[in-house]
Length: 72
Image 1 (cartoon, rainbow, N blue to C red):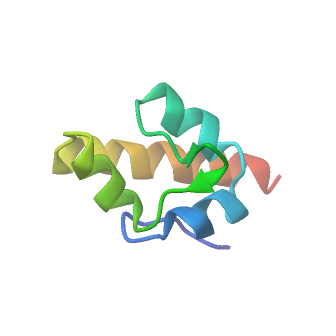
Image 2 (cartoon, rainbow, N blue to C red; image 1 turned 90 degrees about the vertical axis):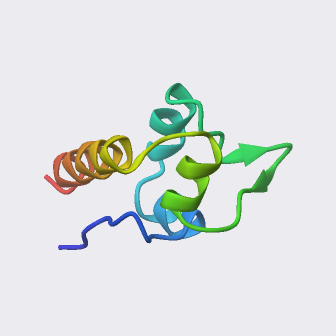
Protein backbone atom coordinates (compact mmCIF):
# COMPACT_ATOMS: atom_id res chain seq x y z
CA UNK A 1 0.00 0.00 0.00
CA UNK A 2 1.24 3.47 -0.85
CA UNK A 3 1.80 5.97 1.91
CA UNK A 4 1.69 9.75 1.75
CA UNK A 5 4.54 11.78 3.20
CA UNK A 6 5.10 15.51 3.51
CA UNK A 7 7.60 15.19 0.65
CA UNK A 8 5.02 13.92 -1.87
CA UNK A 9 4.70 16.10 -4.94
CA UNK A 10 1.31 17.81 -5.16
CA UNK A 11 0.82 16.34 -8.64
CA UNK A 12 1.48 12.81 -7.32
CA UNK A 13 -0.80 13.38 -4.33
CA UNK A 14 -3.69 14.48 -6.56
CA UNK A 15 -3.16 11.47 -8.86
CA UNK A 16 -3.00 9.08 -5.89
CA UNK A 17 -5.86 10.62 -3.92
CA UNK A 18 -8.07 12.96 -6.00
CA UNK A 19 -10.19 13.89 -2.97
CA UNK A 20 -7.08 15.47 -1.44
CA UNK A 21 -7.83 18.57 -3.55
CA UNK A 22 -10.99 19.25 -1.55
CA UNK A 23 -9.28 18.48 1.77
CA UNK A 24 -6.39 20.85 1.05
CA UNK A 25 -8.69 23.59 -0.25
CA UNK A 26 -10.60 23.43 3.04
CA UNK A 27 -7.27 23.99 4.81
CA UNK A 28 -6.48 26.99 2.62
CA UNK A 29 -4.03 25.23 0.30
CA UNK A 30 -5.28 25.53 -3.22
CA UNK A 31 -3.88 22.72 -5.38
CA UNK A 32 -5.41 23.93 -8.58
CA UNK A 33 -5.55 27.54 -9.59
CA UNK A 34 -6.93 28.45 -13.00
CA UNK A 35 -6.43 24.85 -14.07
CA UNK A 36 -2.71 24.86 -13.30
CA UNK A 37 -1.36 22.65 -10.51
CA UNK A 38 0.90 23.99 -7.78
CA UNK A 39 4.37 22.54 -8.28
CA UNK A 40 6.39 21.27 -5.37
CA UNK A 41 5.71 19.14 -2.36
CA UNK A 42 2.88 19.06 0.15
CA UNK A 43 5.26 20.47 2.75
CA UNK A 44 6.35 23.35 0.50
CA UNK A 45 2.74 24.26 -0.29
CA UNK A 46 1.77 24.16 3.39
CA UNK A 47 4.78 26.19 4.57
CA UNK A 48 4.01 28.79 1.88
CA UNK A 49 0.56 29.18 3.47
CA UNK A 50 2.03 29.57 6.98
CA UNK A 51 1.52 26.09 8.41
CA UNK A 52 4.09 24.69 10.85
CA UNK A 53 5.56 21.17 11.12
CA UNK A 54 2.94 19.88 13.57
CA UNK A 55 0.09 21.07 11.35
CA UNK A 56 1.74 19.48 8.31
CA UNK A 57 2.04 16.21 10.25
CA UNK A 58 -1.73 16.34 10.88
CA UNK A 59 -2.35 16.85 7.15
CA UNK A 60 -0.19 13.80 6.38
CA UNK A 61 -2.05 11.70 8.98
CA UNK A 62 -5.46 12.81 7.68
CA UNK A 63 -4.50 12.18 4.06
CA UNK A 64 -3.13 8.71 4.86
CA UNK A 65 -6.37 7.91 6.68
CA UNK A 66 -8.33 9.04 3.62
CA UNK A 67 -6.07 6.92 1.42
CA UNK A 68 -6.55 3.81 3.55
CA UNK A 69 -10.34 4.25 3.39
CA UNK A 70 -10.25 4.71 -0.37
CA UNK A 71 -8.34 1.41 -0.76
CA UNK A 72 -11.14 -0.58 0.90
